[in-house]
View 1 (cartoon, rainbow, N blue to C red):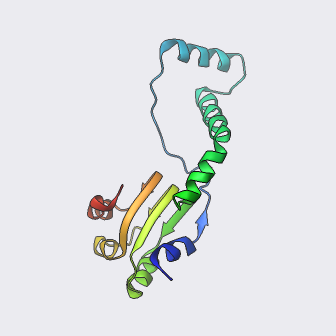
View 2: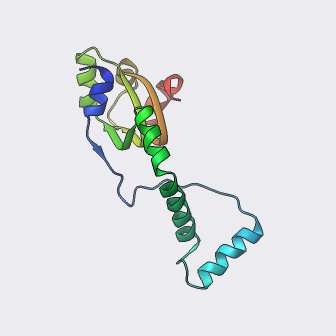
View 3: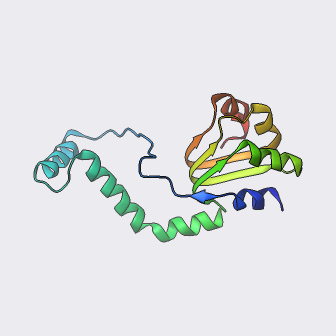
Length: 144
């Protein structure tokens, strides 16, 4: 089993509803006022509700393109978590992982920077990458 296949064989799950990342956007006063008007009129419960709905509508409108791109770029869709045991197994098999995720990629807190360097060839994450600070620092040159 090669490194890409091993990574693809690891469990993949959808992030839970509470697993969110905070983003900041800048809006002009007219756009913001229109959002507030829709909230006041009861179309949305709050600003965040409108923004999430708008984003989901746009993602749905582009779903075919997203799926084609995920397939073409061999991205794991959802959540992919790497434990110390996963990386130790890759090291024992003399394999190097290429982590390609659309969603959330995470590395367990007990993974050492040395183990990560020995087993992870590259990290490409469209979304969020959670790992211990020392692991992120060690992999900095391999994260795109």
